[in-house]
Image (cartoon, rainbow, N blue to C red; front, top):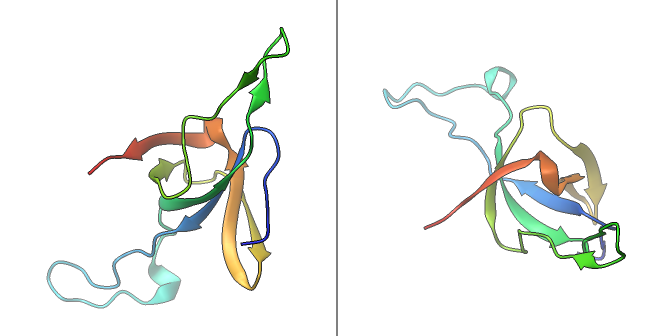
Length: 96
């Protein structure tokens, strides 16, 4: 991806939701909620504190994260739909 976010911003790719229920019923795209789970694609360098020191972000490319339902801004980069948001909109990292 040829996009580098600035400051404390993060670029995410949504991880697609299940298209079937546990009972096998197929859910149409129009009825599905947008997933709140994503994979970090790119991160900014960080934000500066009051003393001018660079504070590095707590997430890195490749991390799977959970974010708020209405968080971020949807953009298209290199033909791919991604989200860009501040690191503070990320609720946590999913660890294996």
